[in-house]
Each structure stands twice: as structure tokens, then as C-alpha cells.
Amino acid sequence: MGAETAIRVNGVHKTYGGLLARRKKALLGIDLEVGQGEVFGLIGPNGAGKTTLMGCLLGLLRPDIGTIEVAGRAPDDLWVRERTGYLPERLGFDRGLTGRQFLELHARLAGVPTRQVPEAIEDVRQRSDLAAEAMKRRLKSYSRGMLQRIALAQALLREPAFLFLDEPTSGMDPTGVALVRRHLHDAKARGATVVLNSHHLTEVERVCDRVAFVRGGRVERLETLSGQASARQAWCVRVPGPQQERACVALLAAGFAVSSNDGLLRIEGGAVEAVGPALVGAGVTLIELRPIGAQLEQLFFAEKNGESGG
Image (tube, rainbow, N blue to C red; front, side, top):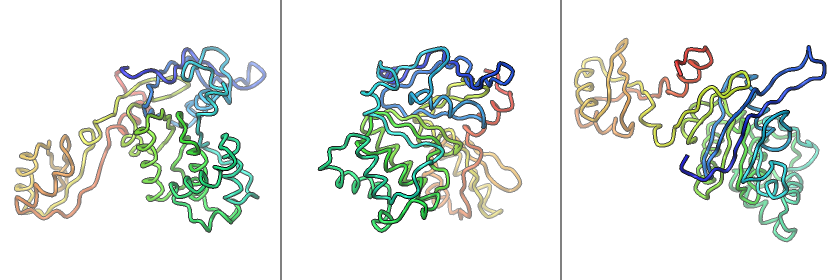
């Protein structure tokens, strides 16, 4: 890795339970390095150990064996805690608090000076697209999507250097998904290190520099994604039947690999923004353009089913 290492995980094991016969081995020797300013994704099937690993990275769980360092310190070091933002998968908030009371509490926990609390709350409220009226309502009246937004808002207080997001788009509509994506880009732009656990593979592929595929408590594969999203994505193109041959010629000339299946065209390898101009220039009517079979999805299912040759 070229960047300075921000998070280092060496030989981490974690087991739950008391009696030996009932002990569950959640992590079985995890080794990872996450670079400073990197957006790093964790993917894998349910029960793979991703959330347990996230808990260990945050210092909420202690490994049985192995070590974890965040900026050369223990995850529960106060210096690290002051610079960490966390959006949990399970939102166990006090639902009796109003939105404003909730953010005030977390602002003080994050060490925001008292005089700056109102300004800090207004900043994250606007950045999370929460209505001012929602700040007066109790959390128990919030929808799942609104709870995700306010959880994201509290994680962004003080612009943390280390941001841990566990299923951040759960329950969000497309606008909310785009909001999370924007915050991830902003965090990366200011040099923050982000660890993202998500089943939303299309979004992972769009925002992450690298991903780790976790299964059975082990990292089975690391994949680099940065700068490859457009080249890795396949698209389905539908045009009028009589124009298909002309469309193929135009798309090949624009740098795409083209194949035909059941009257539809499958393209990959080029910049999707070039599809429209290429077809229009050839006098072809574009009826439909949609993504299909992202390579990260193919990786996920191949690894899940044990089909990888790596």
C-alpha cells in the first residue's frame, strides 16, 4: 500500500459463548491494513463476522488473540475515540429524545464546546437533509430512513478522522443512498479513513477504494476497486430491432465490448457517458440503458459459493 497505514489488524481471533461446546468462533485470524484516507469496504454473507470485526475496530469488543491499531494506538484510546464517528447497524437510541436533544447529547459526548453545539447541530442537520421541524419531534416518531439520517448526522459531528459505517443505507430511499455516497466522497476528500460494512454492493463498488470479502471469520479475498467502476460495470442496451447492427458498430467504435443476447445488447469496458452520443451520432434510438451484473456482485456470489480460484 502506498498510503500511510491508518488501521492495522494482525491475527485477530474472537469467540463468543461460555461452555466450550457452545462457543462460537466469529473471527479466525483476521489480517488487514487500511490506508490513511482510504474508503475500505467489508462484504460477505450474513454471519461472516463483519459486524464483530467492526466492533473490534471500534474497541467495543476485545479480541481473544491478536492486535488492532488505529493510528498506532489502541482502538479504545481516548485520542482515537475523540476522532472517531460511528453509525451502528442497530439503532438502539433513546426514542424518547427529540432529534435536537439526541444531537445535543452526542455533540457533548463528542467534545464539541458548549458554545459551538447549536452551530454544530445545524451544520450536520443540513448536511443530512433533515427538516428543521424534525428536530422538534421524538425519535419514536421517525421512520427508519429518518433514523438512519440522524444516526449519520451524529457520526459526522466534528468531521471525524476515522468513520465507521455499519449498513448506513439500510431503510433509506434512493435520495438517502445518494446522500450517504456524497458524505463518503466528502470524507475521503478531507483525508478521513472510512470503513464501510454494507450489503449494498452497487454502492460499495461506487465509493470504495478496496474491499475485503469476509466469510467464516476469515478474509478470503481483497479486491481493489478505485478508478475501475466504469470499466468493471456491464450495461444492458435496448434499441429498435432494425437498428441493432448499426448500434453494435457505433458502440464498438466508441470502445465498448459488445455482445447480443435475446435481442438486447450487453456492453462493458468503456465510459457509460459515451453510449448516448455514440448512438445518437449513428442515428440509433436508445430505448433503455441499465446496469447489469456488476463485477463486485459476481465476486460476492463466486466467493460465497466457494467458486473462486484465488
